Length: 292
Length: 256
Image 1: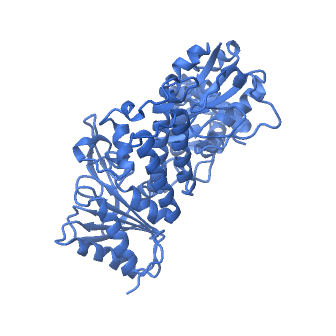
Image 2: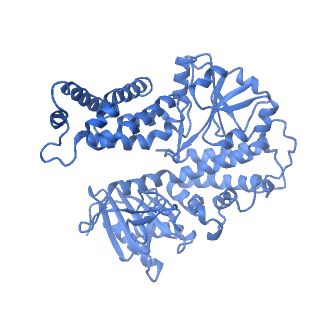
Image 3: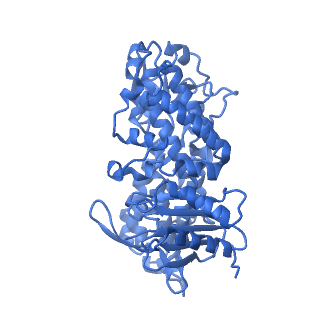
């Protein structure tokens, strides 16, 4: 049976008590599907998501959240391929998938008071870092299955801009970090920039995750949300083939210039602005603004 | 030479410390308008990051300087690749900083080009502060509150406080929340959301005064204006008028 298509559909695959619940905002233009991750086979989770989307008359804008612990990065491309095939989609521009987890993402009420996730449920008591506890209500009416519009909007709006912002912040922080090497008259033109990128610092882990290296959870538990464990797949799905190509070129430049994997040494005052230019080309393919 | 510097991120100021030392340029952190007389110009390091958002106060600063200090120089610095006559690219510094500084376009130049960055223009932020998302703007709400307070003062010459209060502030039948109290709370919330952005603007001192006055007179409004003693002690009429005057002046100039 077809049901009315909302403008926005959010899917959160998490440790919910209920297997598959649909919540919506009062005006019914925003749907939140809470799907339990306790299915025996991952295909069942995929089938549930596809089933919900198939039931809509047209495809809404979708934002799908999967937990980092249970879903490796490669799972995102599996999800996109599955949905594309099952729904006969020519393109995946309306689908976005993000990994979340360990309380460090904007979905969590501990991170964002207008978020959605409390301790295993929508809303609830939240304990902040200073030890204070506060009850935050996300559910508006449990009988009618409605949630508060402000909470849905806060999460939705944030993730429409978050990816580009994350790319911008990485570009900015790398530029600031390596700026001294671009000063006029800087004498050591054969310097290895990689030697100046301290290992296991937040910046180096962000950079490595951006170029596709897997970062272990314990290495970056405090700043999981700044990592790019869902980068390549989302870039292609959301911004198309061109973005995917620009990203590949940028990744190659980072590998050569900043990670030291090239024998040919380009002077830093030329190489660093080159990397920045490629970052900018990538951002130019993302139509959204970074601040809203 | 000493220059005023406005930045939200100290890294920007320190990253080329050696270069600027060699050029004999020293930055002094901007803290208030009073400093402007003592320095040849101001350098704004963009973007300004505030509450997790990236904003650019450059255009408001240019308007302010063009009006109040047209002789001062305004330079903008950052690590974004931006083409602009007054922009210093921190990844492509000139051999001689003064070649850049001496050729800056005047702040009141007619052909000044608006800076285009990824950050949100603070003018837009100001408009959102004033207009909000509801039907009533900050200044409209304040003018209504101010009018009620003025009528209260006039009525107090003719009758007692209780009588005047009932006429003006008592919630109408069926109302659970009084208009003035509710609007005051809304203003307070909105103020709390925006106040940290104002510290990067040329009228930060005026906005700090507004913040102090809002906090000072709040006890009167939090009790729906019921306490005569608070009305008198907190000089509520005078202070509300002052808040309105400051906010309205800034609105006319920067968020018309």
